[in-house]
Length: 117
Length: 114
Image (cartoon, rainbow over all chains, first blue to last red):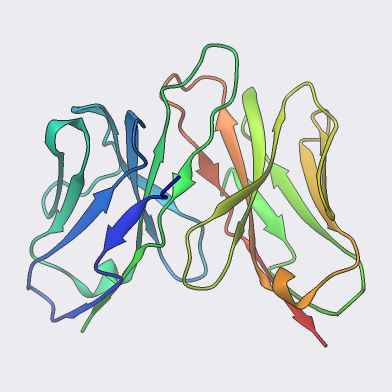
């Protein structure tokens, strides 16, 4: 089974520029997550999709970050304009729809390392 | 204050030795607690998942324990190998969340030396 794919793997931009990241989840996974992981910290959820709809975007800085999930499959995360503090690894994860009464598994992609100079 | 705190922040051990990583959490009630392994430059990979009613869960040389009364979990690694060098992250899923939200600790960085 293919895993979660992300691209690009690395990106270096100057502050105030824009950048976009792409994620292809595991086939059949209805739920997709974008996380931000700053060096030395655990991942922080930015946005969660279930199929096409947004389930949780409470920690997404909406003034500069946006995300969409096309046709309930691939997703893109965009930052415009970027700030120095956006330097981090952006992780995409996917999971099956949660089954009542049981835990489910989130599968992570390799991440995109963003450096803002 | 973080809801999931891990210690130590980093650890260096010799190959073949055992080690134990600690996780204290305040998330309550919770539905499950997980330990993830994150190799450098890769995404986290699940090692164990324990529901609130489980006390221990093993995955090969990795054994996780859970004490829901003291709100503590530990991850014990037996007979460490060089490939165990990674960051280990404790993650708690709040029972109140119907969206599967996960709360991550900051991780413990383990370095296994030959």
